[in-house]
Structures are given as C-alpha cells and as structure tokens.
Image 1: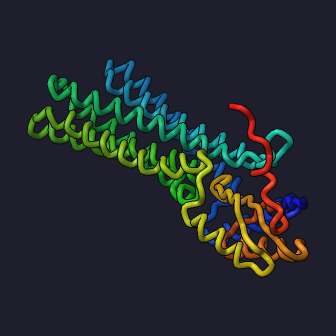
Image 2: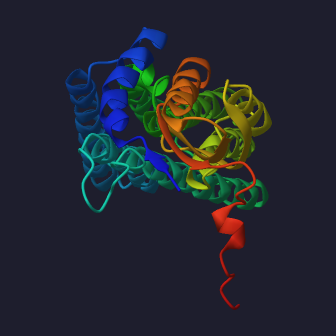
Image 3: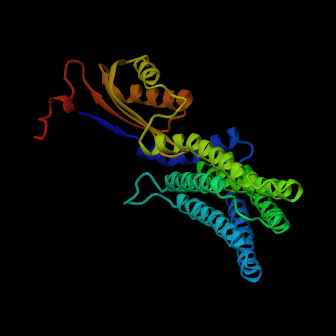
Length: 320
C-alpha cells in the first residue's frame, strides 16, 4: 500500500499560500507594524485605566473605578490578542507539527467568551437598577465617559485594518467597540439626566448595550468554534470536493475524505484514493487540482488498488 504525505509541499505551500493570501487581502498589515499598533493600543488603555483609578480615588466616585476595571478588560483582551499573534508566527516543531497558527483562534474564543460574560453582567446590573435607579452626578459621568470614548476610538482605529484579516484581532476590536458603545450610551444618559433628570435612562441604555454586545459576540464566535471543532471551511462542500477528486483522470473512486480548517489561513484534506494505473501522476494531478480549485495546499492521500478493499475497514475494531 502506497502512501503519499505531502510534507515537502507543506513548506512550499506555507510560503506560496502566504503570497496568495496577501493578494486576496489588499489591506494585509505588515506583522511588525501590526504588533506596534496593538502595543500602542494596550499602552493607551493602561494609561486610561491608571488615570481613572486615580480620579476615582480622589473624587470618591465608584462609577469611575468600575469604568477603570472595564478599560482594564480592554487592555487584557488586547494583551491576549498580542501574545497570540506573536505565538502564531512560531515555526512548527516536533510537538506542534501543524505550527502555532491556532493560538489566534484560541485567543479569539477567550475574548468572545469574556464578552458574553460582560454582556450578561451588564444586563443583570441594568435590570437591578431599573427597580432602584441610582443617584448619578451627570457632569462627572459625561466628562469621564467622553475621555473613555476618545481612548476607545483611538484603540479601535489602531486595530480596525487588522480586524478584517484576523479572527483574533477582530475579537479584541469588538471588545473595544462594545466599550465605545457603552461610553456613548453613558454620555447620552448623563445628558438626559442633566436636562430632564430622568434617571431610568441609565439602566435602559445598559440593558440595550448588553443585548447588542451579546448578539455580536455570539454571531462572531461561530466561525471560531467551527475551526476548533475541525469543521470544514465555510466555502467548500465536502461532497463537491470528493466529486472533483473522483473526476481526475486515473481515479476510480474516493472515500474516507476528511476536510478541515487548520487555522484561519490554511486548510487540509486526507483521503483514500482508488487508482488502477501508476499512482504518481494521478496524485500529482489531484494535488494540483486541490491547490488551484479549492486553495488546499496540505493533502495526505492514501492509494488503494481496485478490488483490494479499504485497509481501515478490514482492520479489527478495538473492543469498547
């Protein structure tokens, strides 16, 4: 039984696929420039957190300290994203034979889960305040929320271009956008309280923001979970892929097809291919078709002869 593991191509593919990817995404950010942007965003958020804690202690405002903790969560989400970016560029080794690309997917999951937790907490806080509207110092709230909004918008601007190209950075970017939306709502709420003294606006806006954040986080986390669950790429149907492989000249049939997304940029397939003639040119043709038509550069193909039967089906099953 012949086996063809496309290892030599794996190295060429990582390089070639990188080029193909950058051509598809014209907004592709240089990794070092991207790192500098994320680092700047972290620094800005940490400075704001420090300023708010100092301001909160001096003015005795609990709201200010709570907002400082919120901004600290922004900085932490960016630190997680930054660390994952660095780790994902490590070359593959004996322990991680697919490389470290999924570090970004894991970081995105962590950040989305924390967003869900934050939104549930905000919802609960909003509901409790509906029944017991707090005394709110309008001017203090408006000024501080204005500063926080400015910082959130700077952070969002620093990470926006990169968020289109990375699940990981998009999670951190949404974290910031959620914070910016909170700040806008707080400013509106403070203004309404100053003008009409209608204190219910604060909890109503809090509930609205929490639902908005939750909706976004749940929508964005789906592709992340799909990758971690070894799901197929969203733009490729397994049946269509199997049919295309079976149509290659020299292929009698294809079975045991497994297709999955390694990380955001790489996909892989393994399959058993029944070949009547010489396997080498047939396998080369399949690999070429997979690259050109489905953008799959990593393929492991096992050759079987007609009528031979599948080795995996013939193997004795382990006792359960």
